[in-house]
Image (cartoon, rainbow, N blue to C red):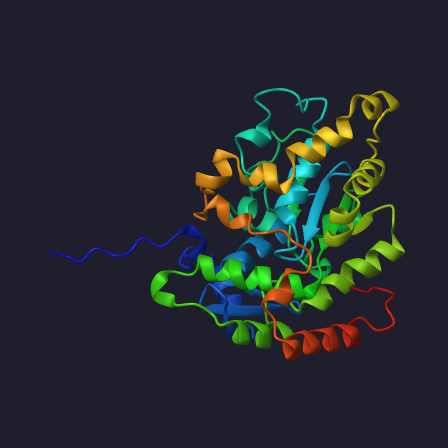
Length: 329
């Protein structure tokens, strides 16, 4: 009898690539991947081949609308949390926070706010987005240089989220190890730190990704809002109100009095989202367990993992890379 092959989750499959993508891959620099076997360097940043397939399709076909809102983030910087906040904020009339069947109670935020290159344009070469209600809300990890031309040419708004690089490293290391198949083993923290510091991480180098959007936010603050995870944790209400104003849907005095701001922050809180059944037991269509997207969410947790030498090295690199930009972590 033939031996049964182990089931490979969708996010690890590498056999559904277009000919165009296969030809491009053969020309690109490579490095060992964190989850998938190989990273490919495209437009200055590192990607697994599946994500690169989605990026190419998105660049070719995505037509941004002026009313679109795109959440951009470095991986493992609080994307799931901010997706929930943006969805609740923009749909607070359509889906009042008080309603018992609010979509956030039965759907993971990654389902409600789909990734362009990891979901929509990966599953189909040119998906039909006509049924999505305006303002359309999408997300991406793509660096600024890789965004489709239509995004730059339109008046759509970008909300950018990043996080202290040391906490980002620890969250990324933990997350990617959980995505690896058992027979693949795990990446050691020492190896992960070495590669992160060398710029070889998902959508890395980290500092190039951050600087691209930081500079865009300074040049065009009406189009790009730059946020840090730590700032949202420290002053969530202020950041939510800032978000609402930036997106053209500020809270009314009536909403302020009725506590709508607090209600949004409560339904989207890490504690609340992580305890929902869908996020404890569910799976994304691509195969990841939803609970993997809820680890700790603590600021400064990296100090419990990184050695003083690792911290010092990463601090030094980031200081050098961000020097003169006005951006600090």
